[in-house]
Length: 79
Image 1 (tube, rainbow, N blue to C red):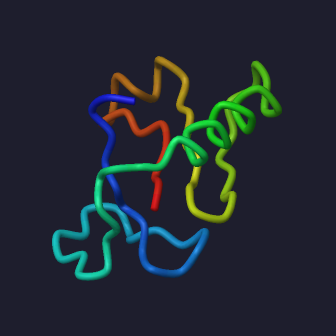
Image 2 (image 1 turned 90 degrees about the vertical axis):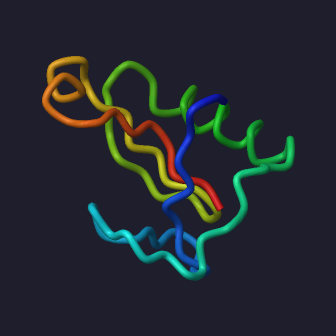
Image 3 (image 1 turned 120 degrees about the horizontal axis):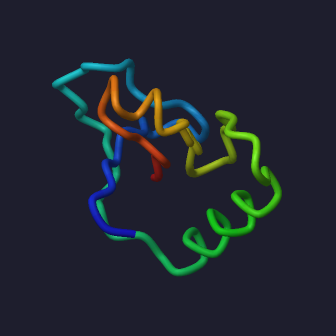
């Protein structure tokens, strides 16, 4: 994944509030291959209907193109 933002706290499944600028416990950008595989599997499980889903070390936030045009697109918060 390119252009990802790590917006997660140190607590699994919990991200920082939108527009938070101070994120002292944010994990590093580098992700192990195992998390990327888990992200792919979760996206496959969700299917065609976009929905927010917290899964341990990441949160999927797939938005429709209409919503993405209104706000910055966020697909996945990982940690």
